[in-house]
Length: 209
Image (tube, helix red, strand yellow):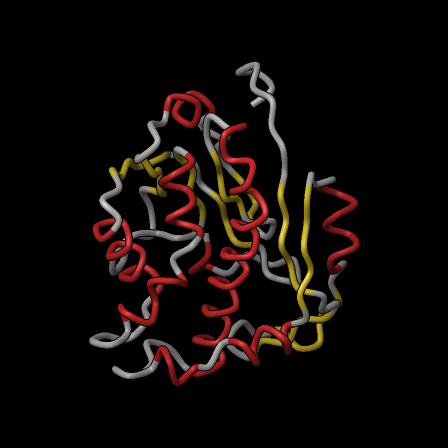
């Protein structure tokens, strides 16, 4: 972004937990820096922090399970937490949407092995959303995205669409994203940006590369 002479501002939502346990990822009570570390590193314009227990009380799994679960229950709950986090960070930046030529969603647990595509980001139209060209197994990869403000807000607010989507089908993250893109009339583009997920242990699993 700096090389493209672009200014940027950062918005953050995260959870307050300082340890991670995930049997699915073979992570057990792993210490992480938590919200304080993230805010210190990213120096956001605005940020919000939520306890996972508070989020879980708001996210009734039954609302999104009419057609069954796409994943094991703990993984499905983590997907709902992710969508809720995206909704909250979107609420932080949208009041200032007129300030921005483009908006990107970048996860702090990704190790980027290809640079931010600043040229594509800065020329994105309001209805264009860029998503990764890789790991498009059942729909579209939801690991990162950027685009115009309207498209980015739709991407970030897709939890609002989840109840309707799950009336007829399980909540699979990639299939759901593809459906939202179509439902919202967004123009999808693919980006060459690549980010490998780094687990709380510092490892990169084969399926995350």
